[in-house]
Length: 198
Length: 198
Image (tube, rainbow over all chains, first blue to last red; front, top):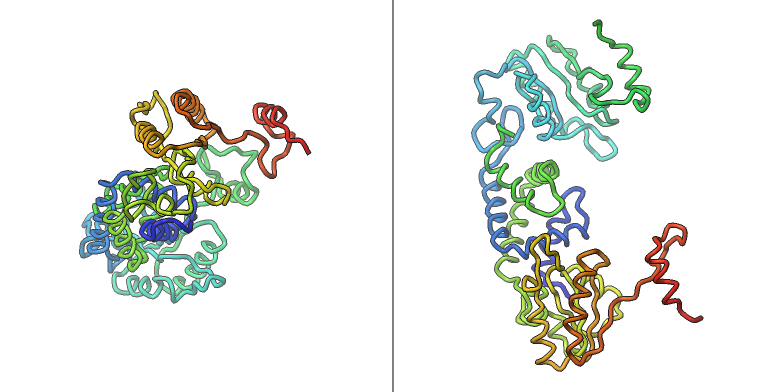
């Protein structure tokens, strides 16, 4: 867009860096925002405040504005039980179930040799230190059922086998609202194998 | 997300205000951004710079960082020929064709009584002043083929009929790459009626 103001172009470029937002969507968002001038300022303030205050929790690597994150800081959470997830969004998803009373450990990614994400790029060494230092008793692997998630689950289950911890992964089965007809054979096979007595 | 840092929540809320971005996508964008701290700062700077420098062109109501926008400022553009569009993105779209040498007039919206967008909410009075003051000879209506776009086209063609200007709207017809079979009957009907002699 040759005749665009460089200030507008720069802002479009910043939006364009976000995942899943292409140049056309970026332009649409920026033009919308530029018509609401009061919101530009509060957006910029929100970014500045996040920049200055948000950092990684030194315990679980979730994001926090405090010393430890609110979950690690909560005395009612069981520190001997760790749920391993790949991202911040996954913490939110598990928290919403209200079924988990332990703490989390964020790998901040999944193994993907093709993209150069090897074990040393993830927070795995930090996980081992936590297991040793805190006398962790149980570890739940809650990783995506993708190629990368599976690879990470296999890698971690081997690595963590050397520690005296109860190790598990999320149950596989048919999801809520699923149609048997349209459920893939791997999921349906797992659901059959792990059938639950009524 | 009850245990989220308020700084993170505020930033998610700001993204959430953007059109077509829901709370889940906002969270994904924010978490992604928070992992790239250097980009948060440049994003915030880009917003601040846009806030301080970008304003509406007093002539055509496009966005600019200069007195007039680059198009109105260009002596080679024909000031007697105005293309009426509803948004900044539409200017970009028409400019990309390299087929238009006149200037633009942005209504900054389309008529929509249901949403409270009446003629006085659009830059229509400003358009009339421009027509009178600049001796405009030709006006092209380049508005969406939506309900709102059609209503605006009808309203403007009646209103502008009182001025001594050549008034036209974009041709209707089958678009590039279209399949006759899948073209709707209104479009195909227009394409037949306006068929071009070979």
